[in-house]
Length: 201
Image 1: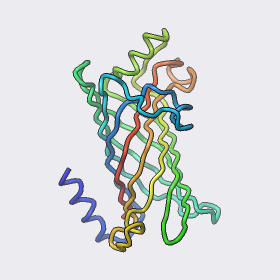
Image 2: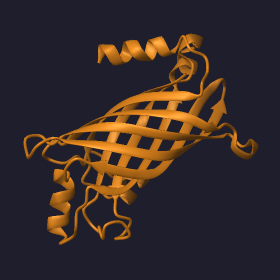
Image 3: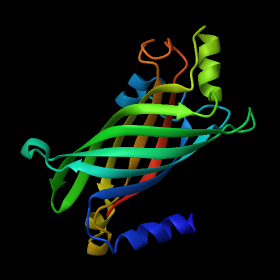
Image 4: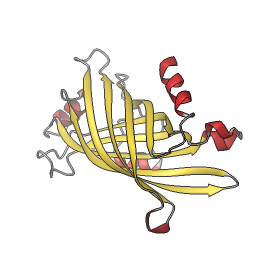
C-alpha cells in the first residue's frame, strides 16, 4: 500500500490531466443492483467475506462533452478477487468507457461516474457460481461490466492545491449477462462495493 501511495504522490508532479490511475478495495454484496443504487443494501456483504483489490488506468477521450461538465475516459484494469478459501483466487481484466459528471460548488468538486464495457475472469467467481446454482442459471468468464461511482476532489476539500485532482470515493463493480444477452447468463452476476483513491495526471 505504501508503494501505491508513493506512486499517487509522484503523479502530483505531472500536470497533464489526461490520464488517471486508481486503486480500490471492496466486498461482495448479496444485494441486487437496484437495491444498491437506491441505497437499500446497507451491511449486506456476503457472509464468506469475499473481497476484491482493483487497479485501473484511464485516458481522457473528451473533456466537457458538448460544453457540458461531462468528461469521457477509456479505462482498463486488473482485479484480484480473494475467494476467502472457497476455491482458488480469481483474476479479472476489464475494458470500458466511463463518463463523469462534474458538480462544482464553493471551490469543491463531486463527480458522478458511470462506466460500461466488458469483464473477463480467470475462473468463475464463487458468488456468481452460488447465485447461478440457487436460481438454476448459467455462468461465464466473459460478462458485461458496469462501473458506477461517486467521489470528491480531496485536494480541493482540504485546500491543498498540490493534491487537486486526487479523488476518493465509492464505486460499484457489477458483472452480469444483461438478462441473458451475453453467454445466456440471466442469473449468476456479481456486485462488489468498493472504496477507491484515484489520481488524474
